[in-house]
Image: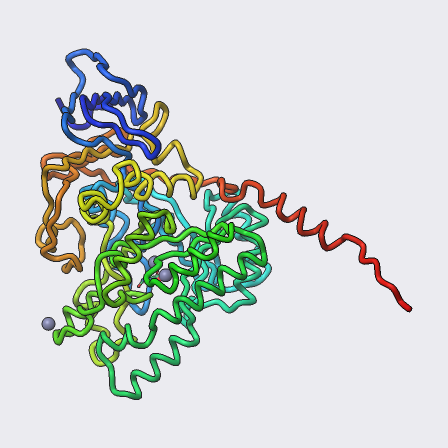
Length: 489
Ligand code: URP
Ligand code: ZN
Ligand code: ZN
Ligand code: ZN
């Protein structure tokens, strides 16, 4: 039976959704799940995949990637085709990438990304960065939401001199996001203080990759996270904190959530699993691979982030996949400020999260589905089309064998980049089959991807995070308008 069959029956596996798991068959036709129940019978000409003893789960959704992004004088080496092909081999079937405006223009940025994404072999959506503020940007945000299927905007509080925005811009952006039902996202590091930290390191003669981490310590991530959270509270709009890398930032999110504020925290795989010792490696080329922002932190931060994820303090896992090859990373020899920031993760995320969180016993299989897929689909308002194995959902499905194992190496990964920050890692659990849009794209360690087969997924505004926000506003306004009985004598 050919792998391009539009009808597939997955038999006998444990079907896992975020809310429930059960042994059942899954029947797919023309890219959609049409039945989920035990003992489905089909005719002989239909492709049957035996999933006995394995987990049948929604394909991963990576909420945070940078494919073919122009950044720090380079362009990320993995484009929409190579990054997505690798992701499919690792069990991710959709990602959301960040559109970068062109000279502040959102529409020019959007058009550029439509072009970049033409060879997509996997479904994708867009967030958009806001790097400038004026009336045109404000109007373009509305067009992006109402006509282009974008429901989230990212504000960089770091990268002074390029993407960074000040508090005034952030507040305008938060207000606009709220009015459109779009989710505000922040890269939370204090860019002015990072700039100061970088000068300090250079003056001390610390020019290698360790200077990157030393120049932007956790306190600067904690400060910016707290500031963004407080401004979002002042505006009364939900906030999504991308790449939470430190205990400092995580604790600000925990405090806000405890007080009832709608704040989402996204750790990324590198922050959960790696520690900063690699940045002190005497080989520049090795150490530079690990340079990303916010930096990979000291031992202890990663395990604390894992615990926060297990406890629901943090809600979903991304990668911040942003790859530069050895030649590009070498731009920063002699000056860590010039090392293009970013690490890989799109292909490894599902395996590493399984091994670290499920195989280790930290979370349940249903929670695994929630943090790698379902919660992302809910937050970006595409659930249950994505993020679920339900009748009517897109047929984006993985089959994971918990008794098999994986090994990571730049020699076998599917990226275009030439190194891998998880080189040599092994673990329990292997994605043996990936079905994307109803097609088997990964089977028997073989990729069968088609450029152009990936669809753009429009994401509508006003996700569940906005439910009830208007009621809180009305209560606040009526409290302001209550007459003050004041004596004048
Ligand atoms: O180092 C990183 N994180 N590179 C990608 C850009 C960003 O800040 O997300
Ligand atoms: Zn960022
Ligand atoms: Zn070297
Ligand atoms: Zn990023």
